Picture 1 (cartoon, rainbow, N blue to C red):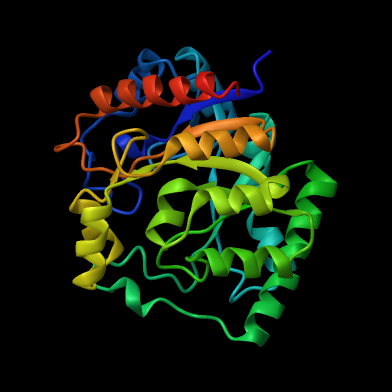
Picture 2 (picture 1 turned 180 degrees about the vertical axis):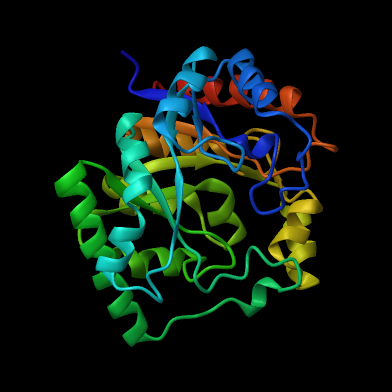
Length: 297
C-alpha cells in the first residue's frame, strides 16, 4: 500500500476567505471534478455539510474521503479548556471520517482575511506571549492526541502570528511533541522561508502537508506594494504545484529522506474565473503524482 494519498482542497473551485470567488459553483461539481482529476481525498470547505451522516456518504458517492479539515483557532483569546470545548463538533466529524490530523490555524488576531489590511500589519508576539501561547497549544494538542488520536497540525499562514520560518522554529521549539505542523509550501515561500529547511529540521513533527505553488514575481509585487493577502490571491500569487516557482524536486527529495507518510494535499487559492478549476486540478494531480513517483514516495 502506498504511504501517501492524494487529496485536493475545494479552494481551487471556491474560496473560504472570499466566498464570492466561485460562489456560483455547486458543491456537486466541485466533488465530481476532484474525483475526475484522480484525487481520492478532500478537505472541508464552506459549502460542505458539517454533520458526518450527510458529509461522509456524499463524499463516498464521489469516491472521496475526508483528509482533514481546518479549525479556526482562538487560543490568543481563549483558555485551552475553552478552546477544547469549542472544537468538540469538529473532533466528532474528523473522527467519524477517520482523519488522522486536524489543520489548526490561529485566527483571533490575523489580518489575512481582511482585504483592506496589508500583510505588514500582522501581529508579532512578544517573548511572554509566545510562552503562554505555546503552553496553551500544547495542552490542546496533548488532549487531541491522547484522547482522540488526532494530531493537532498547526498551519502557519501569512498574515498570522506564525508567518516566517523563524516563527515556525519558535513555535515548534516552544511547544511539546504533541504539536505537529501542517507544512504549506506556498505559505512558507510567501513568508520568506524555504520548505526544505522546515522538512529537514521538523520532518518528525510534520502531521500534514499542503501543496500550493507560488509565483515569485506576483508575490514580490504584492510585498513591494504592501498589499493585503486577499489582494495578492486575486493577483494570482498562488497556483497548483509544478506551475509556479517552488522547487518541488527539492521538496519531494526532502520528504523522501524523512519517510513522509500521509496526505499530499493540493491547495491552490485561485480565482476560478481566471484559473479553470478542472484544468488546474488535472494538472495538479499529474504533477504531484509525478513528483511522488519520481522520488519513490
